Image (cartoon, rainbow over all chains, first blue to last red; front, side, top):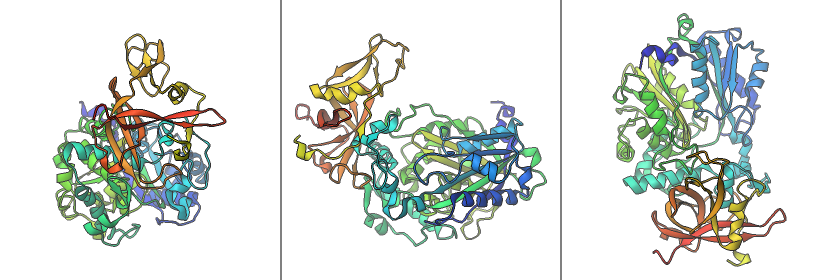
Length: 402
Length: 145
């Protein structure tokens, strides 16, 4: 492919920002969102009036707490004057919204696009947990399953992605001999890294015994295979590369993105339940670069459920198909001093369910060398992958430092 | 299945193109949409055949025989429903293994479920003022075990 056609390379990440993050903040989610947005703009060395584009995932809607603010709220609160804006959930995972921003600046529709993702699931669910926001669950009545995908899950008491993803994991276990001991390493590694992230939710050390003592959710997933709902917001500024030269930080370049989905867009009808859309998005990314999986210095891979990280490792070719279990087995390869440091901020399993944007934020922190106590051991990292989503909604970005 | 054993279920809307699917259990039959031109089984229902784009589609009865493609034993009380733990499975129908159905496995100990297990459809009747529903569940098939 002609490198001139890889137009995402005309985009870079110039600023990153995060709000306070906690299990429950009970603060206005728009306030958290704006905290993150202003932090990202300031981090870039820009002013609010420099922002001429806006992108977010998922926009308003979804279960209570799933979205802290839509594009319109932020647009108006900051009195932005926009040349381009976009919002929506039907895209290549949560990072699809950032990828669209890259394409917008590459196409010249805007110069500096503000991207944000905001959640307040912790406060919304309160003490009752996820059941509080489930259709038919506590507190929210629903007399009938709605049409669409949920029509084929709710009558069978299968309302949660925990159930759907656990069945992918079960299939993987069956075909490749993957074990819960291997899966546990994703959770244990995340917890070890979270100990060095001041914003992480869970920071107490976790042992394999702790993991096996946790209550079962949907086999093979126990509680520690599922991410922790929280309140918080993350934001980025995506800039056209020639507009980033004089900004506060050296730009983090976008080498290639992966957005493909070739299997059916369905959790149960997807063509191969031992893999996911991670397969398609991962292959797509590598078709757009001369870099190889062996060039990757660190990986921040979605862990809304632990198995999704295994799926991304295979989908991105960071290990052979079917071998993600042995790859993570003793935890050494994926530790901060390993060959492929993974989810260095604690991921969503221990860091908090910031829903996709946390991985990209952490990739930038590490590439800048700003990880502090959690900075990876290898010096001068040059290449990072951030990947978000799973099942039938997947997107990934390959980043490089100048 | 006696009425006393029937758990709460969030029943489907019956107004759309899937009405046949949720009511054919009254006759003890499992049905899927079937292209009358190319023979493709289609699930969930849609207005045209995904293979030849024919609109000549109608629901046809299948054998009800299926294989467990994957499953989970669910322990978490997400919503009112069957007694915990219960088995959620994805089964593939005998007529076309690419057609899958999420369902519950019944009349089996959760610990006895295996991938590849032959199962057959059974129907759980729900009387409802908005329209009666027959939920297709699956149980081990003694004729193929």
